[in-house]
Length: 585
Image (cartoon, rainbow, N blue to C red):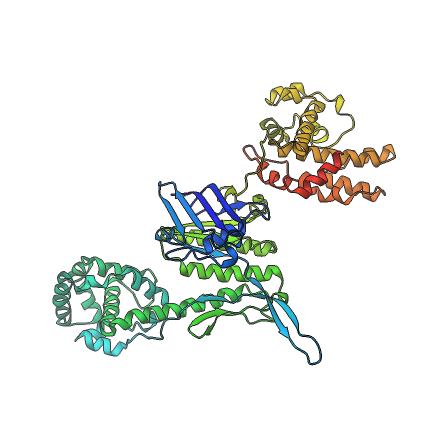
């Protein structure tokens, strides 16, 4: 099942948009759009979902008009349509939803100094993170090994191990409480088996080992026939406790847990929840501590405040943006993992990684990938949706890769890639043309009219019309004119070639002496060429370096890869377009 479309109406900056995305489960879905397009409005739509409707803050209605009623609609590849508005929410029938976004907020405090006018002092705060809204009541398990052996009967001392340690394992009892149907143990077949088995066990004489051997042959088959009893044993043995040495021991351990449950009644479930809370709190504390880059200055850990477990952060100015982003991201991801209960979940991550360095980006991607793997092991589906203005190739250098990520565009750029240009890029490293195309196609050269690669282009099935580079650049500069002066779709790769060649030509023409002109031509890479010219005293306009975001786009692509869309998004930026226009006018 994929999420085919998302339709948003009257939410913050979005009046109405239908996004055809085909989001895939258990893969990072990277949704790209330029700043100002409405990524935050997209996230707010999901963040405003409540169990039975959408609840928007007044500031988040479209045009800040509460008469503009919000609607969020998902269509699935199963054919289902899910709708949330201010009267209903069928999305929550299928999905748990969690949104991770920027956690800073401005604060203003009015200060008064005698004899002076009052003034407002502002600061940027990181909002506290409430990991657990309501801490469960403090209920402990009522287990005593001696009492349990006595309750078992004559052979309790020989057969039962002390399992006090198990009652410290929150994950064990989380699974028991959530996966075991205790009503099954009240069935007649279960009661009859227990009523006959345990008296028979207690009538046996001999050592503990000999009695276990007798149980293995005479009693264990009847225990194994009880499905829920066997399921409970399987859960216990999956943890590998040293107290559970063999299968007979595992069934008696399960019996002890059942006995504790019967004795405690409704408090057993409460004890399970409290023990699991303690495990979660310890996990939260250790994880946040392990990623706290400012632990020498700030003791950042979850603390109990009233009935909640809360993390309070330093002031925003006291730690770097990257440190803030990775810490709050990890905390919120832990919270989302706790909140997700349904089989299908949606995780929205709204541009929180802009300030992260490489190490923190690896951490970010590692945790998302690990979360996906964890959900897959549980046979569940998660739709991680990463909203960003960054080039999606930016993520491929780390844990995400082409095989994992699915890229979508909230704003489709008005582009159309030319397959013949792509073929030249794919074949550029072929030894028959490598030196020539590097020198005469991918960089400026003053003598392109002397080159004819018709034979080589035919052999590689490239566009023979472009075997002479001047013909190729006629096409390139036609595309540049289309990009600058028309509204029709343009080829971003042609613009990349055009900008690169034009800048190199303009700088080449500024070099006065033939020797340095030759050195400029023989210098590898556009950026290196500009630095060479600068070092010999040529004034290079700053825009030439700034446009490296376009001309330094890697044109070393493996066959099948096309970077036209992310490049096209950059080219649609008004400032970049004006800088390029200045090159050609």
